[in-house]
Amino acid sequence: EDQVTQSPEALRLQEGESSSLNCSYTVSGLRGLFWYRQDPGKGPEFLFTLYSAGEEKEKERLKATLTKKESFLHITAPKPEDSATYLCAVQESGGSNYKLTFGKGTLLTVNP
Amino acid sequence: SAVISQKPSRDICQRGTSLTIQCQVDSQVTMMFWYRQQPGQSLTLIATANQGSEATYESGFVIDKFPISRPNLTFSTLTVSNMSPEDSSIYLCSAADRVDTEAFFGQGTRLTVV
Image (cartoon, rainbow over all chains, first blue to last red; front, top):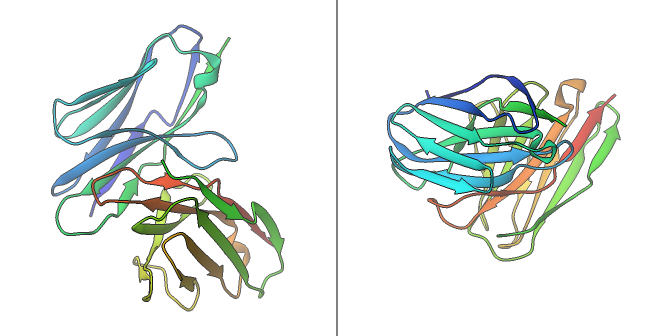
């Protein structure tokens, strides 16, 4: 069965203090790995999709990387507005099934 | 990216009653989904809403409890039937255009059953 584990569960940073969030996964074959950001009271907001090991994508202070067993979301010089829950999801390859399997998320708090 | 609107945004319901949640997408999409998000738990797929046919349910979810409709390519409803306090959760509508592209989410419906 697919499994997605995110760590840490919660992370508190000072503004400007860079760090990384981890998403480890076990699937028989990976079609794609997705990162979302979720603010309180809102639905998940799409950030990145990664499809193959070695792939990297960047957006402002965020950079996502992918290996065969895990993905990292690197946050460089975070600001308070980066505070949110970051969700990782995997999609298994094969067939027309779209199903996303999510981790429990990492709650990031950035203090000014 | 698609904009997805859900109604209601929140509700408090009596046990034993049913609630229907509406999901409207601002453009035609191939696929629509319904998720449940319980406190401290992962976002969990309830079912894929199929246009013109019965929804495809994930393990642990049944049509009698969560009937779903999808009359066209922009609209879907999820009904939570015969509610109990265990059904208190956030329910999210999602849509995607292709199997290898990202899914977009509505803002969610926060349901409390008392």
